[in-house]
Length: 331
Image 1 (cartoon, helix red, strand yellow):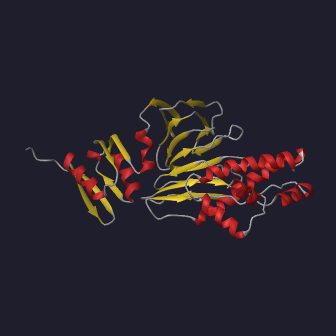
Image 2: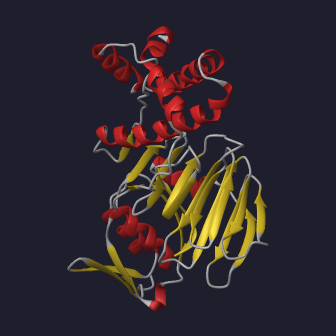
């Protein structure tokens, strides 16, 4: 397979061979092997065919092509199950063309073009970014990055909630921005919840190390350790750190919602995004705490449970479910 991949990267494979290789890449774990062989091939080309003065240009062009072609190709493969996977692959131009480019001109500045990946309400999307990082995007959330991603930047804008498994690159750290808060990472696994309608941003670190910074305050810096939750109040510009069981905050990417001592007013926000259903909650019951786990249960089962264990009635009014206080009779 190594010889076939190198033949493909050199622009020498036939159309049939290219299609066979792309089908092979789509299988689980084969993308990682492709990436490793591609890196080995690039090193061989640098050593043997690319003049030293053009090696920086070579890296830049390769990364630009990598990001652009992955963005085009990931649209071709989607599933309509609960999780929608976008598989992203690479097509590279031949070495002779690159050599011609290097000897004729330098790369010119490109206009930034943005790619947005969103998850509809009631869905979770998974996407592989141009740098091989993996992102799970929660229901009602979206990420945005530009066509220079993995070439000159690894900047991502987030609205909503996403879990990141970031590819390590010390020279080009990933930066996830949400409102005033930025999360700077090298290679790690973490979750960020930053819905625009909410007054807080939460960052949960599972592995590695991240640094929190602010776009409005250059003196603000806070490093996080694995197992920590950072809660940032957008109005007060205040940050608090606490140690948590990270599974309670990140299991949503696996289809689980762990509710732990959560007031009803916050619980319905999760239910709205999970089931694409609007709720209205009475003030009398909005602070009632709940602890349970949602896996494959439908909304009707969840509401029945809430009615059984708390003084709450769920009443449907057109497209809205109203949760009202109902005093339960004494047994």
